[in-house]
Amino acid sequence: MLVLGNSVSAEYGLRRGSGWVELLAERLRAQRPPWSVVNASVSGETTAGGRSRIAALLARHEPRIVVVELGGNDALRGLDLRATEANLDAIASAARNAGAAVLLLGMQVPPNYGAAYADAFAAIYPRVAERHAAKLVPFFLAPIAGDTRGFQPDRIHPTEAAQPLLLDVVWPVLAPLLHVSTAR
Image 1 (cartoon, rainbow, N blue to C red):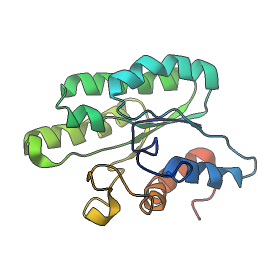
Image 2 (cartoon, rainbow, N blue to C red; image 1 turned 180 degrees about the vertical axis):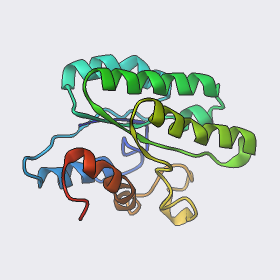
Image 3 (cartoon, one colour; image 1 turned 30 degrees about the vertical axis):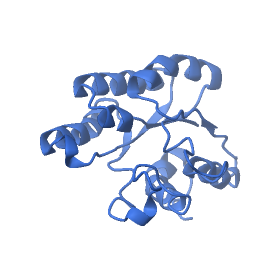
Image 4 (tube, one colour; image 1 turned 45 degrees about the vertical axis):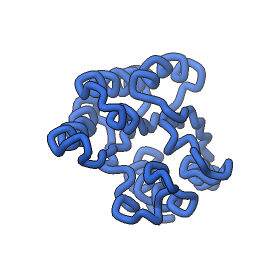
């Protein structure tokens, strides 16, 4: 499995090995047969960066599943939403063409760019998922979104204590792709 994400998946501000991707890897090592997880997440990554890296990552790791956690930095920078959607389309298409299932982790942004931008941004993920027969977590940060205690002082990056909650929102959607039980 390949996780292509940004700082939220790259353990920004966290103790190494404490992020949701590592918690996922630990859970999957207990499965029979065990899965390996490659965390190709980079702090600050945009969808354009992910798009530029996906071909090489697919060739190198040959994943059966690609989890895409990108787009948040695009929105925080106010980037063109058409470009964000095109980049996510290209990533999902490349993964599907390589034979991998795709799981998109949707993101939402605060309304400081205006409700129209926030709504248009959130709507990208279901459209991309539908076009590429991808699975979707509509809002990855949903379990902590309304609670500032789930975030580091920057109010962007989840705390270490929030990491199991993030895994819990991903697991029920991911588990059927793995053909494992959704029970924890």
